[in-house]
Length: 284
Ligand code: PDD
Image 1 (cartoon, rainbow, N blue to C red):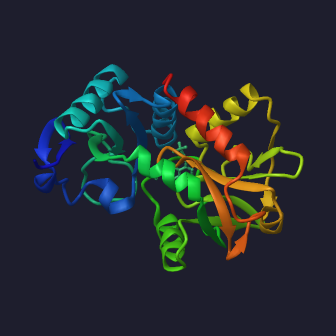
Image 2: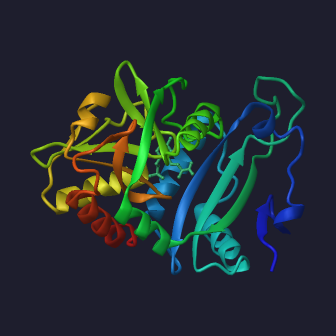
């Protein structure tokens, strides 16, 4: 069975799904995206992902190409047509097609919307969580509005490639000595008092939806959370470390720049949070 993508009103075979060469997403990275996890038909953290999508679009003055109810139907249809039980749904909106000129098109353009879905293996993610992952650190060379989930991801691409080449799963980006976030996830540590520490939600990180739900879970579990930047040295000395994202849920980090975090095994707090996250995210 061939994969199916949604492109501007049509469901196409993935291999035949194209956008125009003058789409501003292609020309200028003038667009945004969102990623939502679907498990057994329930859209995890759905409200949060949709709210962030609207926020990203507003920040770039691009209008939502369709209402949220219609978009939900398209999401469901893409998952169904790909015959997926568990999936990551990628949604991307660009300013649309216009003659190349940096400024917005004068008469406005019709925003372009594409959706794709790929299989998500929750069991595989769970077994990875039992082993934990390694991260490296790289300089954060990104612009100052990474709170907008734009498709302009070149620094993130370079960071992830550096991680891959080092045999690590993620690269933690460092600005002025402090870890901001991963190339596609938020970064967390746990101190020796069991307090969770993660960068505050500023323009220097993407406000992760998983991060938000993980904070709510921590409150439910009566685990203290400090939203403040931490250094690489602090992370290496931490009791535990982990990352959060729609694609990782809560994923323990066991090594930073080749140095073990604590005894090099995933910690109990990350495991507890991962379990709690699964329950809470399901509520949508
Ligand atoms: N990335 N920070 C960055 C830079 C990200 O790209 C992501 C998500 C996150 C976590 O956000 P959330 O918890 O809402 O998934 C933080 C997605 C998964 C991606 O690019 O595929």
